[in-house]
Image (cartoon, rainbow, N blue to C red; front, side):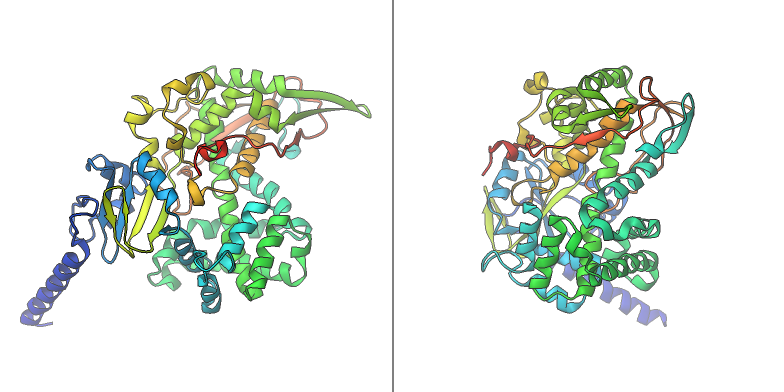
Length: 503
């Protein structure tokens, strides 16, 4: 290209960029203040790509207001950092809506057809009533380890995170999908996690045939397995959750092929945070001196031994664990505060005020839990530390109101599976602690970094595995059956909504 043409071209690019910048960052004085960005136009995108969930925490320390505006290339994003404003957001769930965001995300991630996307878009926010695939799927959600043991006196090495991820996948999916569970095939499990690891490249959507080739192929492999399962009638023997979700899609004329694709994304929601939450709970409590022995005593006190046909068995009632193992429960809740980084995202459906701040139609609104969970003015000077006793009943006066604890979101976007996930995580952790002693293969306990955490995750994912050795605890060597976990329908108050404090 001749030099003069290059200059003209460059000048044109600058002019367009300047116009876009003015158009994007043009601020009404009534809107939340603009957050600074180091590079015009793309500074926030660079910051998010580098720091991910920590970027919002850094910005919140630079802006004094309880809500600020991030000016992106073609979109405004309002970021709420105050618990008081969070409650106002939750009360305006029609104007500040989540379902439109979820519909766009699901269609992109799952790779569904245009017909399925059109079906999902109908009454996506429930404006015309509680019908349509989006609303009916919400209702469906709302209504509804012997091989590990070492030989006696021996130790067994394992990669902690990989083992937990695969074990939880293997244990959870049969209860969801029944006897025709596609994840009985280890190759399908591997494909699921290959897909999950590549979600960001799929969402970005730049030359996906090159940049997202592997995760798209993995997604297609899992979808084909579900398609085969559903065509063979596998949904008839699945859980109430899977049946109702399937029926909602059939009732809204979604094809079998697209139902299978949506189900791939659905399982990510079920599994993606359970394994890391169990991992961090086991890792962090073992990295604190004396904590394992204290929790051993709690769990042992809840364990019942029986003999049947000469075989010893030990049983744990998960409701008893939640009621009686206060230190274990506190350790788990502190993991959710310390390692959660999810965000409640909404779309501003019409111009509206949030307290004194004007929010403009078409903008996005985000409530990053990490900003609130890492606010020292709320949690104290040790906010950056893992304190396993922070959530003990006697420590209540030393922590903020329950509304400041947001690992499961809140309001209309409160995670409907929080009790299922909690039961599952506590079951894994409690049985592991009851049955095994664990130590590092070598060195001292170190906390893995989390820079590679996927966009789909709410709980941070470790960048590398932790190699450990386990040994059966004394008294458990001759137990011939896996510990039974007898769950209960009793609801344990995890978040403020469980206590009925917020409508």
